[in-house]
Image (cartoon, rainbow, N blue to C red):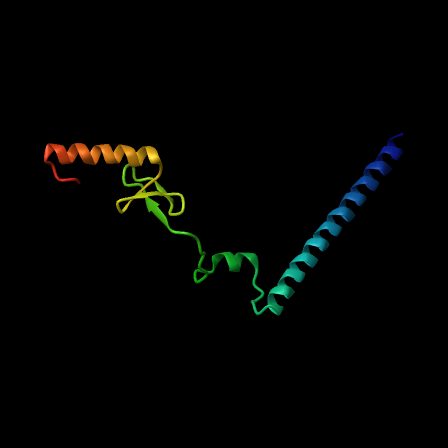
Length: 111
């Protein structure tokens, strides 16, 4: 019985090694295909680490603006804009509007 169990374990380990080898081969082929397609499109074939560490690579996105009431940064497309001020929500726009009105009534300059 012990010999049978040893053979089962040995076969299972051999199967596992073969599976892992096949998976690593597929990953290498995919990486080679993506590098070849990058080379064909005019890009350079660099490793992932080199590509992610490249400082000259600029990421493009939309600008973010601070809320005039609380200072939270929000994307410009999501900001509520009024009188040249950007707000994170209509509630903060209204709160800031009330605050500016009360300051102007008290005679204080808005800060």
